[in-house]
Image 1 (cartoon, rainbow, N blue to C red):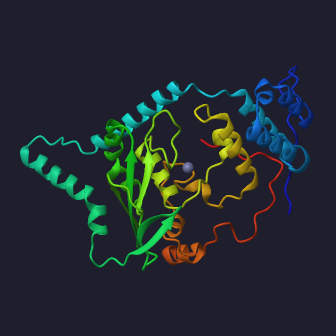
Image 2: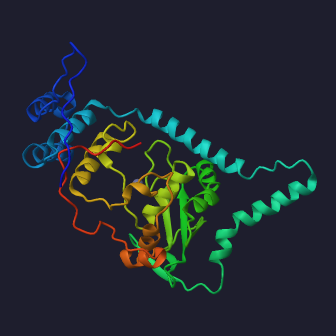
Image 3: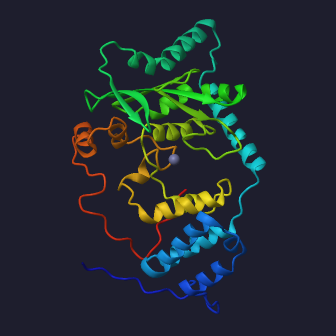
Length: 331
Ligand SMILES: [Zn+2]
């Protein structure tokens, strides 16, 4: 390989640029940090695991140590503040979903047409799912069952039931997002029919909707797009964003949880197209691969059948070892 390596550029005249902190300096700051000294049990063990991996093994040691320092420098938000921000977020999403149903025609027949259009549009997923020609396969994730028609990998249909356990007000808010969630998950060859139910059962995923907690697959507070991502988890998909970049300084997540996700990120390999789909950024759409993974079909061949192109989830070769540079910041 040939290539010209750019020479380091001098800073502005008279300004001495500080050298990047080295591992020793970072370890000194971390071990003297009051938040580090206050750690106990599992949290302490996780922080020490990060430190020793970063110090002794990783070529990206400085990156991990500076992110750990950032994590320790970021205190948790008080729960009330998190609840307030989360409730506002849900409200905004409900309003956006309602705005898409608004009739704005001036004459009665234009309004009538709009109403018919809304009814048809909102019942599309249900109509596809209730087609008697469907060949349902019962799949499960974490012991809960859901239905998939995967007889044609190019045309995958999912039917999943969810029960929201929360205050009546929060339950109503989440229910209003049903169609927006279905529409966000809809790509060519994938239809998800989300059915909210009031009764528990072996084919019902139960979730909370507590605005005091962070949005998770078990706590449905968030926008329609955010809840589509959480539904993705219930259907067996993993997160594909960088946990360290997203959560090290996330005040709405408990410090112990942030340490947990930090160590998970250090040890895992993300799919090569992970950054492009809704399991990385919930405003992105699902990828063909996600449809295949939800249907629990062999991923590479299923994607090839859907797209007609060669596909490999982790790239053609085993992933290269992590380089010395930190990944580019996300979002
Ligand atoms: Zn997630």
